[in-house]
Length: 129
Image (tube, rainbow, N blue to C red; front, side):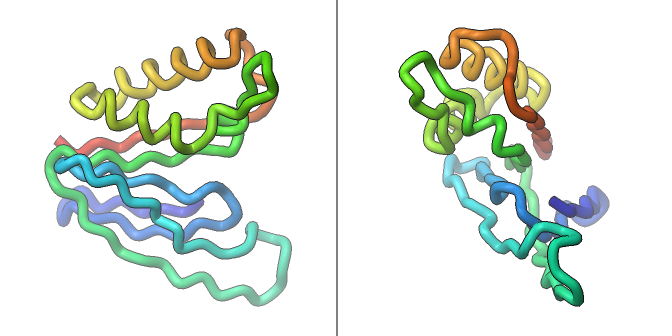
């Protein structure tokens, strides 16, 4: 994931290079999947990535995550999944970014029944106030 955030004009430019697409939770509750993506970096030669610019308004939450966040399993082998992540984001949208990250970590640990993550677990939230 490559992202350039410009807080002066409240927008960011992004391109996704192999990781799950980011989620953008708008202040009005609308959730958008930022699904512009290309192949993983370094896999192919001479790949052109076309970045996209997106505006952020007050209350918007940009969510970047690795597959380890949504692919964590419970005792029955069921994945946490993007829908549970989306539901957690919606449920905690009035929290600060750091509180929301903590809530999602706790949700995934509760879901999996473990405090240990077997895969990479990276979760970055940017919330415009």
